[in-house]
Image (cartoon, rainbow, N blue to C red; front, side, top):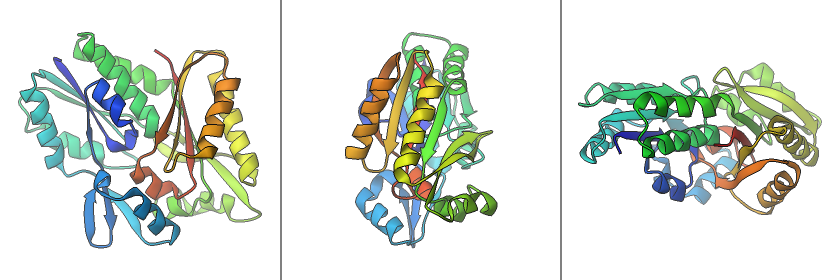
Length: 279
């Protein structure tokens, strides 16, 4: 296709979806001890174990070289322009690495800071790729992504804010919200940053509140929804079933094994719901 679409692995795109729409995914890196490697090269279960054992697990942006070769592959496949969608620059320098690589490529590369992550970013990449597959010019491809991002909502349940505090993604004062009485916080993304939205006593009530907020945001509009977690099990299937029952105009509902990069910052047990305007 004349316009290639590229994103990063924090979009949590299922592999089959990325292949279906010819979306290239550049992996963000995970750092464990002396090892620095692409997130898809790590054993997911081992990373979760390390997080539960409170071992240091951090992340860093892809090397610009990873973007350069991905861009070159797109050009070799016939792309005359590239649209690159990435995690909020307030959460990661991934977009900066893409911009650095873009200076060395012989076709125009448009790097967009999505201001978000997870499936809000994933849905936007799919919208862009669908427009590109239909032969839309690069301006319309970017507009399709932007429209999906502006209408999307990220809702995130975490067992604790400690992991976000350690990574500098949320302040110490905000982290104190969940420090006592088994209070469970619910977060969102606002202005490109992680921000507390509300809280509830206990896990069951917090997850119930999470679903309520997703249903409220969906309203009567036709929406696509993703439920993302590091481990997809009974809890995730139960929540997906409740969303399917309660959202009146539901388009696609996807269960997603979330990015381990996101998991490193929100901690084990976290669960996200993305509500996005349907195409």
